[in-house]
Length: 102
Image (tube, rainbow, N blue to C red; front, top):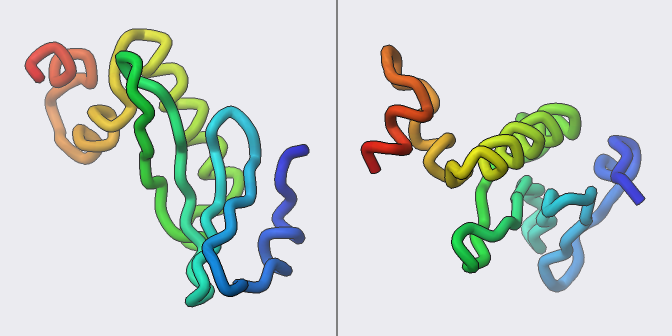
């Protein structure tokens, strides 16, 4: 069942890290310290990878879902999602150009 913003705001940290899954690899990691971090778990070339999307509430649930959708689009096109993240902010180069260069 997908997460709801109300659930995320209400969650309290426990003794151990807690993972709240939203689906398609997206989850919120709630640390014992109280920090809430968005992560995306995916497979690239047969290996499990983990992509950090940022802290909640700086990265909202909607923004995390958009990032997940973009990362999955990249994977379908044969581009590692972590490459997309590294390229973000560089001007003048397309994602495909950087991915083929790496």
